[in-house]
Length: 203
Image (tube, rainbow, N blue to C red; front, side, top):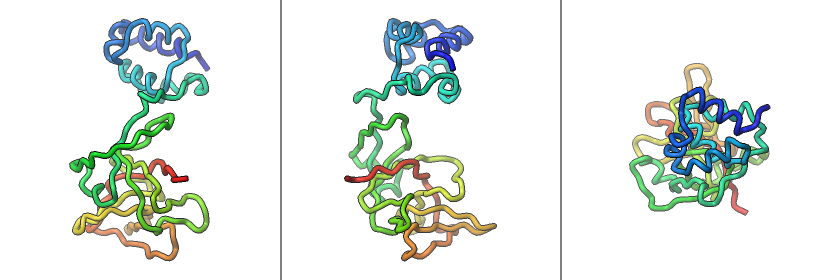
């Protein structure tokens, strides 16, 4: 494994970029970029910005360094997400709830967050389980792997439900984690709007 500063400097040189160009993109000063290249630790949020400035996938940089050298994001760097109800999520991204949540996870995990309602995803067998009131981070993607928990919208009613996405041959289903609820067969009435990436539980 290499030092973070060495990796960033090598990529910057390869891209023929100056520290000033990187600093301007990241909206910081050249001294900050210089210090990071000389060995000062950086937050994961800052590293993500620098990776974008270098036009390099963040994962490529992370694969070359010791992850425990990264600092957690500062409070100001912690991302905010729109916090939606299940009903307002149906109109995402056109709906603006006016509410937002700030979370302190090391890496961002979604495009918006919704609050779970009901107990259809309460798993009596343990984890995964999404109790009522839990906040679920949802990521919008072009593909949705079978077996993952998704947010699915009923086209006619506009309601959104959290369920496990099941594929059985040509048939697709939305399956609750609570066996007391029935499995829903997907048809043209449903569309998946996002995949659950994290669940934040109330304590």
